[in-house]
Image: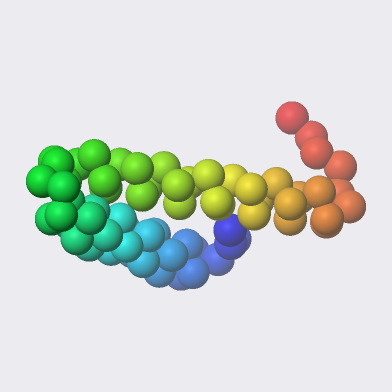
Length: 66
């Protein structure tokens, strides 16, 4: 998502807060464990970041080296 250490720290805090609060709120209605929703939200955020990262890499025109 970013190469900046400050932005990466801020994004990780936002992602963690989103997953934690979202998981707590979503678990209230069905009565399921909070961890189920926190894990699901975290995984969705991870997938979104992977898609954004791969699109940025594809659009940058740089060669990928292993």
